[in-house]
Length: 122
Image (cartoon, rainbow, N blue to C red; front, side):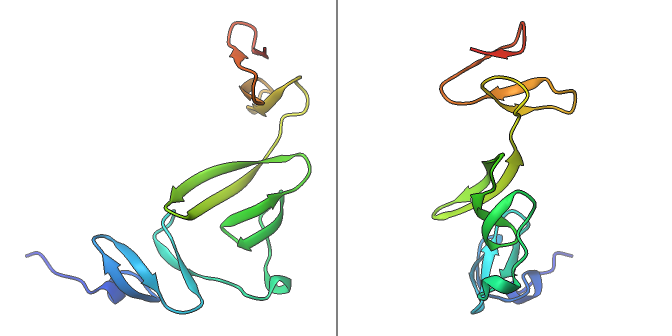
């Protein structure tokens, strides 16, 4: 037997759903597609704790300004909403943006490209 669920039973703090997502959250909440929840937007910046590497965040899931030595990684974008994490920049290899745990370059700063033969940015 297939059971129909109401929008409110699927998404806490949601007012209206479209298909399988919440389209309008209660006041003080914003829909975050990354984890499919209406997340509380903390209005007082003194009460907000940003993730590591983030100097300024709108809520704990998205950063507006990364700290020195970190760079933006957009992990989801839906319409006008952009969810950003800050990732530690690779500083040990010239022109490299990201390194893996073995300190091998995996991506380069713009406009450079990764030469996979010698793992250098050119």
